[in-house]
Amino acid sequence: MSEPNFTVILFKNNKKRKILKSFVREQKALEYYNKKLKESSEVIFDKEYENGSRCKYKIALTSKTCELEKLYYTDEIGRNVSIDPKISDNLYIKKVDMFNKEEKLYDVQENKKISFPKFVKKYLDKDKTIMLSKLNNKVVVQEDDNYSLFSLKTEDDCERFLRLVENKVDKKNFIIVRDFTSPQRKYLYDLLVGKGYDIDFLYRTSTTHPKGR
Image 1 (cartoon, rainbow, N blue to C red):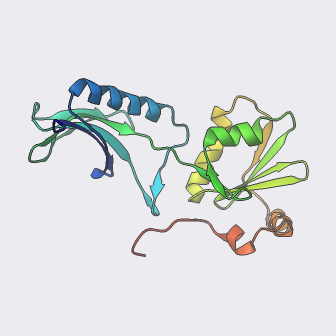
Image 2 (cartoon, rainbow, N blue to C red):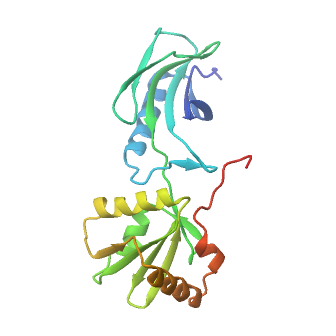
Image 3 (cartoon, helix red, strand yellow):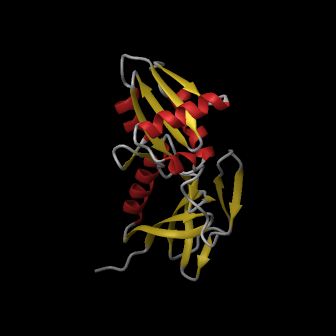
């Protein structure tokens, strides 16, 4: 079997994170690379935190030979950035792009993580008016007397998620409440505790912490 000449690699904060796939032929490597870029472009709610720290991802197509002294890519705010294509001896970047990894939110009652599209389809695609309330790093979804709770990594992620709901969901059958008076917040805590949710969990503002702390 021929030894692979081309590799598609995922980078996190400019450090090699994972080898996605290796190829003998450049055409197959390009096809896979473009497929991953398409998947990235379709992500609505992307991952911005991992292990409590902000993160940015890139995807690169690499080869064993150097073809360029400098390589350019477009960063997340549209700037052209130049990089040295050399990663190590016999490993050079041919193409590189910013990459979106899908972030998920934790569906507390179902005890599993779900994607943005699945959340919209399951909880917002209804005829009734839905209320979404921001509670620390959590989203409370109310439909009549039914309450569902969702947890995100940080309060920033929670706010970002709600902005996406406002901007990306076509069916405007929801109301978003972000700010409460103290009595309103206490009422919501008491109501959720009465539904069986743990008060310490409700008070938390983050579900992830930086390593080493």
